Every structure is written in C-alpha cells, then in structure tokens.
Amino acid sequence: MAKSELADLHGKVVLITGGNTGIGYSTIQILARRGAKVYMATRDATKAKPAIKKMEAEGLGEGYVHFLDLDLADPRQVSQAAKQFAESEERLDILINNAALGLGPFHLTDDGITNVMVIK
Image (cartoon, rainbow, N blue to C red; front, side):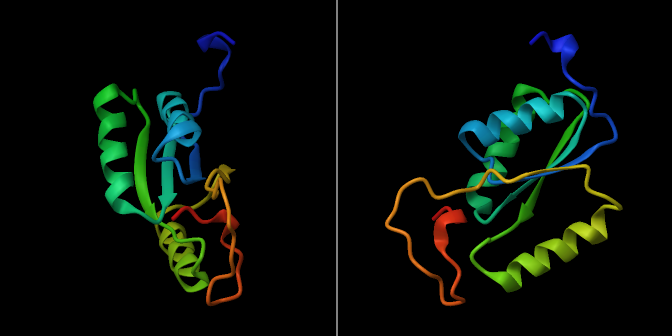
C-alpha cells in the first residue's frame, strides 16, 4: 500500500495497549506519522518512555505519542487509567488491543483475572 493510500488521521485520538516494542511500536509510529494523537497504554513506564523518546527521535511528523499507565491485571488501576484518559480526551476514535502475553504458563491474578492479556 502506498503512503498516499493511508488515511489522514489528523485530529484522531488512538489508544493502543502495549506498544513499546514489536508490532505495537510500529503501529504507533504509523498512526502518529499520519497525524494521530496516540496513547501508548502500558504498565511499564521504564520501557514505554524510552520507546516514545526513540519514536520522537525517529520522527513522528505532526502526530503525538503519550504514555498512559495501564496494568490490565489490576481492575482498580484499569479504572484509574480510564478516568485519566476521560479527563484528558473528549473521545476515542480508535482502540487497538495489542498487549498480550505470548507464552504460558498462564495463571489467575489475585483478582481472579487470567494473565493472558498481561505482559510481565
């Protein structure tokens, strides 16, 4: 697909879970370079913030990437992240569920939630 065929995302707000490496990282770059305001929602700021700085150094065009602290294994923290997002934005245009645990063994958290969607 040619660059000219990609949608213009200026003014769009995107939230992507995960994204400090791999497919998520590249997806965030593409969305931001098309003008989107992208939230990298991940639980590890020590990985997310350097990844965002690297993206900025590589160039994001007119887009932006922001860190949103989100730990999918903790329902209370998920609620807090949702509240923080809602206080910052009037809407969400695109949601990409990218975060996942690639290999088992899987287990339940103290809240009875499987850790399949949690990167540790």
